Amino acid sequence: MKLAARIAVGALVVAALAAGGGYWAGKRNAPGHDEATLQAATESAGPAKNERKILYYRNPMGLPDSSPTPKKDPMGMDYIPVYAGAADAVDKMEEVDGAAAATNQIRISTDKVQKLGVRTEAASLRSLERIVRAVGRIELDERRQYAIAPKFEGYVERLLVNVTGQVVGKGQPLFEVYSPELVSAQREYALAIQGVESLNNAGSEARSGMQQLADASLTRLKNWDISDEQVRDLASSGNARRTLTFRSPVSGIVTEKKAVQGMRFMPGDALYQVADLSTVWVIADVFEQDIGLLKSGTKAKVMINAYPDKKFAGTITYVYPTLNAQTRTVPVRVELANPGLLLKPSMFAKVELAVAGKAAVVTVPVSAVIDSGTRQIVLIQQGEGRFQPREVKLGARSDTYLEVIEGVKDGEQVVVAANFLVDAESNLRAAVGGFGHAAHGAAAKTGAEADKAAPAAKGSGHQAEGTVDSIDEKAGTVSVSHGPVASLKWPAMTMKFKAANETLLQALTPGAKVSFDFVERQPGEWVITAVKPLAANQGAAMPAAGANPHAGH
Image 1 (cartoon, one colour):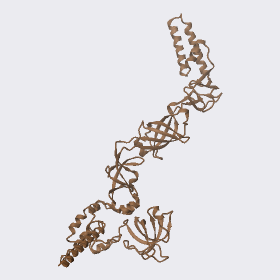
Image 2 (tube, one colour):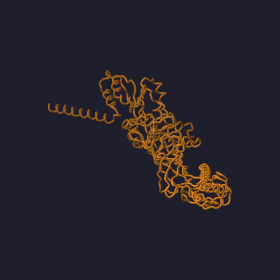
Image 3 (cartoon, helix red, strand yellow):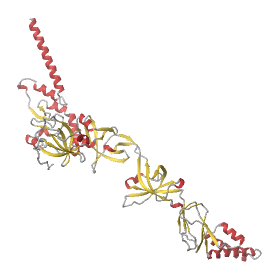
Image 4 (tube, helix red, strand yellow):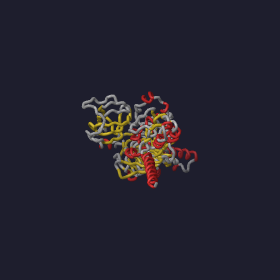
C-alpha cells in the first residue's frame, strides 16, 4: 500500500515537471506573440475528433503576409498555422500589427536598429532665427559725393590740390581760376556800390535805380559761388580780383581731378570730385528666396578679407525694387560707419543678415527630412523598431532646423540619423507608395496567387550566401559569387553589390564566405545592408569559376 502511494506521488511530480517544462519551452520559443502557446494548446487538446481545420499560415513576425501552404520567411522562420477555432483569437492578437500595417509602419529588429546607428530626436517648439548670408561690395555713399564745377567760362590759373586721392578738409583751397566774365562782373558791382554812395544826396529815383543795379551785380556774383568774404572785400576796396579761389565743400578724398593747370573750362565742367568716406554703403546681392525675410532696419555684420579679425556693424537702409535676372538676386543697401577709413570703395565684402524668427513653431532637424524633390518625408518612431514614414509640409528654415507646418506634432520622435539606411532596410518607397491601400488581404489568396506573390517586391529585403571576389572601396562596391536567391528566383551567379556604408566594406575581405542581406534601392541597384561571416564549410552552391556576371540586375 505504501509502495503504491509512493509510486502515485512520483507520477504526479513527474507530470507537474513535464507540464512546467513544456510551458517554459513554449514561452521561450515564442516568435513574438502567444501564437505558439495557442498552437501547442490546440495540438494537445485531445483525440483526433477535436482537431480543427487549418485556415492559412501567417507571417511569424506579424507582417501582412499569409500563405495557404506551409512556408518560411526570409529569415528561415516557419509560418504559423491559423486554425478555424482560433481565428478570432489570432485576429485579436493581430490588432496591433494590423494597425501598424494599415498605417504603413516600418518594422526593423532592435539589434539591426543599433547596427544602423539610427538616432531620434523629439520635434519641438522653437523660434527659428536664421542668418542670411550674401556677398557684396563697398560703394561710396551717394549722398556724400560733391562735384566742383564753375558756372562760368574761364581758365585754370593755379592748382592747389593736384593729386587724385588726396585728403582735403572742408574749406581747403583746391584751385584758382581766371575768367574775363568774372572780372567784368566784379567791376560792375564795384561801380554800382560807388554810384550808390555818390548819390546819397540825389533824388530818391536816381538812388533807387543805382541800388537796383548794385543788387543785380551782387546776385550775379553770388550765383557764381563768389564767397561773402570776397564780396565784402570787393565792396570795401572797390578793386576787382583777377582770380577766384575754389574751396572744398566737405572733408573727404579727392576721387576725381580733371583740372590741369592752364586748361580752359566751360560752364558746368566738373573739375574736381570730393567724397566723404566717413560713412559707406555695402551693396549686398541677396537671393530671391531670402528677400522676403529682410526689411529696413535689419542689423548686419560685414566681414572684409583685408581685415579677417574685424567685423563691421551696419543696418539695412533700403531693399531695391529690382531683381537681377542673370543671378536671381536683389540688391540690398547696408549703411555702416567707416572709422579710420579702413573700408575702400570696390572692396569685396561678406555680409551676414540676422533675421528674427516669428512665434514658436514645430521644428525638426534638417537631417530628419528626406526630400525626393516632389515631396518631403520624415520617419516617425512609433515604438521599439517601428517607424512610420509621414509626408510633411515645410515652412521657414534656419541653419539647423526646419519648420513643419503639417505632418508632425510637438514631442513626436523623428529619425535624424541613418535615414538612408532605414530607407534601404525597410523598403521606404514601397511603404510610402502604399498609402491608403489595404494591409491584409493575403488570407483570401489561392495557392496559385500565393505562388505568383512569392518573389519579393522590389526594395524588400533578401538574403543570400556567397564568397567575396573583390572589393572596390573607392566606388563602394563589392563583387560576390552567391548561391541561389529563392525570394527573387535567381540562380547562382557572380554580381556586384553596393555597400550601405563604409563599415560593411571594412568587414569584408576577398575570399571570405558570408551570409548577407540586400535590397534594391533603385531599379538595378542592389545594396548590401548586413553581413555575417560563415564557416569555411558552410554556404550554398556557388557559381563555377568564370561564370558570367549577372548583367540583368
